[in-house]
Structures are given as C-alpha cells and as structure tokens.
Image (cartoon, rainbow over all chains, first blue to last red; front, side, top):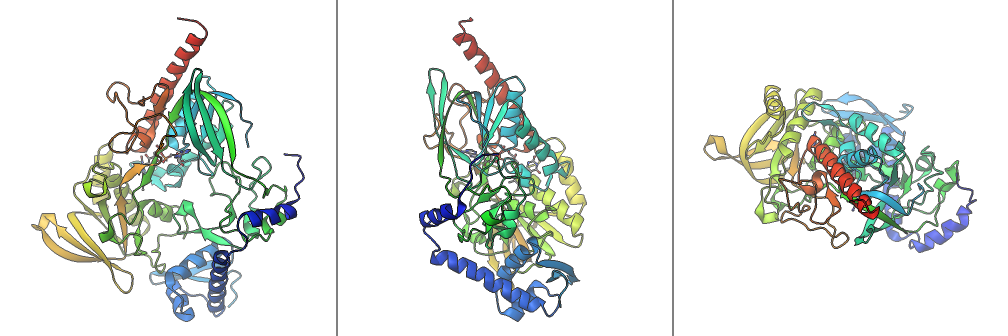
Length: 97
Length: 435
Ligand SMILES: Cc1cc2nc3c(=O)[nH]c(=O)nc-3n(C[C@H](O)[C@H](O)[C@H](O)COP(=O)(O)OP(=O)(O)OC[C@H]3O[C@@H](n4cnc5c(N)ncnc54)[C@H](O)[C@@H]3O)c2cc1C
C-alpha cells in the first residue's frame, strides 16, 4: 500500500479545472439520466411494466428507456418481475407498487 | 502499478489470448517478460465471448485461468492501460517507449471493492458490452477483469468527489497524468489482435442507423450470463426476438471497402450464436444468409451439420438492402440463389452483421515492421517461419497476422515464443562471446 496521504478535495479542484469543469455537455448527460430514472420510477410506482409500456406511459423512446432501465437494474434499483408475452416486466426493487 | 525494471528479455504487446500465451510460453522458458495491454484489463476479445465453437465450452472459463496465471507469474510483469509510443532497435536489442494512461486510481491500493462505482452518480455506455449496457463513470472494467482495479473516465466525471469519499483505501488519485515509461527488451512479440470493420461500413445495411442491426461481438455479450440485459433481447424495445437474421460477409470478401479477404471465423460464430439462441429460445428462428459456408477447422463441418440439424436455416442468398419498419423490425431484400435468383423481402426482429475482421492496431511508424497488402503484419517467409515479422527480433502472433480462430492463435503464440526464445539465446550467446 502506498504511504502517500492524498488531499483529494484540493486535488479534485485542480482536476476539475484541468478537465474543463462541469461543461454543458456533462450537465446535459446527467440531466438525461435523472429525467429517465425519474420517468421510469414514476411509471413503475404503479406496478410492474414492460419496456414498451413504460415508453408509452412516459412518452419517451423505448430504446433509451431500455438502456436506462438496464443501468438501474445493474445498480440494484430495478428487478425483473416475470414476463408478459415477448417482453420481460420490471418492478422497483423492493416491489413498491 | 507493478515495479518496472529497466530491462526485459521479452516485450509482448497485446494481452489477448495470443499475447498471454506467448508471454506464458516465453516466461516458462526462464525469460523475464513485460506484457503490455492498452485496455484496462487483459483478456482481449476472448474474455467477452459467451461460448467457443466447436465445443461450446464457456469462453471466459478457459480464458480467465490463463489471465490469472499471467498476473501471478513471477517472470511476467503486467502493464495495463498502456500504449506503445515507440520501439526501435539498439545495439542491445530494442529501446521501448510506453505511455501509461491515467486511471485516476492507485493500482496497488485499489482492492476492487467497487464502492467508488456504487457511489458514482453518472452512468455511461459500457465499452465491454458494445454500448448496450452501462457502467458508472468510475468502474471496475468487468466482472472477470484482471487486474480488478477501478478506472475513472474523466469525460463523464461530475467532479462531486463521491468516489473519493466512498473509497476505503483512499486510492482515488486526481493528480495522475499520462506517464512515459522507457525499457529495453531483447525481443518483441506483437499480438495486437483484431477489430471489426465499422458497423456502418456498408450503408445499405443500416448498421449504426437502425438500432436492431447489431455487431456480432455485442451478440456474444447479449448471450453471456453476465451480459448487459441478462437475456437476448433486442435493443429497440427489449422484445425477445422471434426471428433473427445473420448477414454473412458484411464487410469481408468485398473489394469496395478494402477488405477483399475472407474473415474466416464469421461462418462459425454465426452458427455458434444460432445454436445458443435456439437452446435458450427454441421458438426463435435463426436464418443465416451466406455466399458459402466456410467450415475450415477440426470438427467444424460436423458443427455446421449439427447447427442445421438443430433448426438453423442456412440460406444461400445475397442481401441487397436492409430497411427499418415503423415498429423497428427489419426488412431484408434478398436474392435467393438456390431459388434461381428470386428476389424476396423478408422481415426479421433483429439482424446481426457478420462484420469483417481487420487489424486491431496499426503501428504507423511506432514499430519497425512492415505491413502486408491486407493491413495485417507482413510475414516474409510464411511457409518456413510463420511467426517472424519483417524485422529481426520482432515476432508476431494471433489475429495480428490475419483472421483466425482461438486454437490457431494459441498455436502461433507458442511458435512466436519459441522463435523469440531461440533469438534471445543467440543474442545472449553473442553478447557473452560464445559461438
Ligand atoms: C463475434 C466473434 C466470435 C468469435 N467466436 C470464436 C469462437 O467461438 N471460437 C474461436 O476459436 N474463435 C472465435 N473468435 C475469434 C477469436 O476472438 C480470436 O481468434 C481471438 O480473440 C484472437 O486473439 P488475439 O489475442 O490474437 O487478439 P485479441 O483478442 O484482439 O487481443 C489483442 C489484444 O491486444 C490489445 N492491443 C491492441 N493493440 C495494442 C497496442 N498497440 N498496445 C497494447 N495492447 C494492444 C487489445 O486491447 C487486445 O486486448 C470470434 C471472433 C468474433 C469477432
């Protein structure tokens, strides 16, 4: 283990400047993520749904819904909840509905 | 980072299956080897595959023990996330300049706990899953990665310090910069592997434009138990596909895009993926549109017959164009050769383009080796010395010399290691004055 004690708060300030700060591009990316997470959670609060159902209820494109849904599943916010025809259904982890 | 000596007997560039095998075989003969990999983990393409043809063994189950062996071998030093800047001959061998990219994580302090990843508030497309899955802006490259060390992607960082706050070993280091490393090596093995032609290289197939037209490596990830969805689903809406098409030679045997040669492995991986799809989804139809099926290796013809026996439809046809329907299904306009050239329009849920294989790396002056007409490393004496490049002391292995399967890549790696060992023996004898 290295012995150096890092002052990461100071280092982070310099790093942030070096990388061009919180640019509009970064902000937009994070905003999209928040908007999709919120929309997906909002629909799933009413019960388990498929991707096309979430897309229809939220008015957002289904390919992006799938991508964000899978990210939420990976990090433990969403779980699979059986199938409906050719689609899997998803629910909020803990089964809130 | 591992401690780097100033001199090594051998430098191996690229830690896919060929580079790892070459490093193990050279180190096994008592030589000190520096193994350099540009990705954050070793393993190359193989560690991301689901199963391997023709045995259908689990690919990562074969690859990961070898990755671990490389990482623990006392004569192999591993440098990941590192690129070659320059390689040139000197009186004592080769002078090598490498550039280690910043991970923003101190490798020897990271315990791979992923607490940084769980604390991070941004998700980004995962390269290992060809963009189908996501990872946080700071992440462990994948479950089988070696080393299990996080890497931070500064392009997406929001600079909120969540990762550093969560790290139990204080290993996030925002001060890291690219670091130049200079070493001497007695011999070099280039094992820089493959890339696929860009998905959109044949505009008429709609790759890169239609979301359900997919890369075959992405399909490997979809089929893998640790893949991005956990199931085979199509990217447009998560539908379990009921009809999947493979378009063969989509970027091979095609002079118009500069890839006139056969990529050799595509027929076999299409058959393999078809078998795996039908094992998991027996009601799903798989159709392979091809010019001719090339089953070139041991047991491959039997594998082809098995696939047909398991219901894969193998159709001799030319696919002229792919268009997208409003529901994101795909319509293929095909000329059915075995039906006298009849033209038909056939609908599928998902299409995989069997894209051509091209070299993973071009030296562009960074290494003194010649490139063949096809873009792969030139082997001047193919019949007599298939592991020798155009430059004395530089050996080549794996797909870096041309498209091939895993067994052939491993055999070549062994040959390259043996040639390098003999070359090192001769050089050392000369330096010691022995005739
Ligand atoms: C879709 C698909 C499915 C396949 N399925 C099978 C199968 O079932 N069975 C089979 O036998 N074969 C299969 N293959 C073929 C198999 O993947 C290859 O034979 C094998 O991966 C070749 O290994 P390699 O080490 O030569 O190259 P790679 O796996 O490409 O490894 C090369 C490594 O070098 C690194 N690198 C490149 N340039 C540099 C540089 N400048 N500096 C440092 N590092 C560098 C890369 O990051 C990579 O890690 C498949 C291929 C594809 C595309």
